[in-house]
Image (cartoon, rainbow, N blue to C red):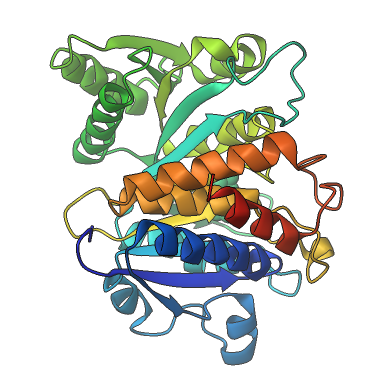
Length: 358
Ligand code: IPM
Ligand code: MN
């Protein structure tokens, strides 16, 4: 959380189109630091599938320890056709979220001007909410196992774990965030209390208790299935949503397409504690079929960089980047889809840099 001193950023381009979009985000970062007059120190780190295929290890021995030294991490994408599914996702992305205790996954859902949404008759005023996804518990913890594997009597378990501490710290962040955002001041808990009568009962009780401390915030509740329906029918209803890890994963893909798709959606894996290292990423994957063609949309990565700037205390730089992005989406881009933007990846980066001046 360095403001005065140099902000140290680790840059993990990762796989596929990751390095291409991250390069544009870094280009914009350098341009905005020059305008706003502060220093960043960038360190490229080669974690990802290429390194895994070369060395057989996903993360080197002191990999996590090394990352702790940074104020923030910018991550491009992980996933490679030659690596079995789950190896890099679990070994790198989830490992970093857990080890660095990035217990919040913050995913703003904002339809930018000029960006197309698949929702009929909805515009930027309607699609503007934030999902606070818990990021270290639930079915993601990897607790479970097999019994009688590969026999007709096989049993598989995958346990969802919720701790009072883990739930409370996520809720705390969400209530504080809703207050700071200062819009509708409504926080919707999204869960499934009608079926998950233990785990989500804990969420509901913790939520209700904490709501007492925030009389200025309207507490609200949706079952996750109904939430999916409302998000499509009445997205303008939402202000801030707080939810569990797995539900958060699912509803933010739905939300992502509402805001124009993976070309624009960004998120932050945040450790809000003092000295915590947070990691920001575009939500789109590594897109192997577009790799190396200069056609992928870097807006999501640039949006992720704006979130990184905000988290590291550079609010005015973050605002400047967000404004520049909006200028580019509304006046320069034909579409947010790869190959149909009317510009190449690097041109979009240049256009955002130019727009920073205005
Ligand atoms: C996400 C992704 C990850 C998740 C995968 C790649 C492990 O889908 O960031 O939403 O499930 O969290
Ligand atoms: Mn996901």
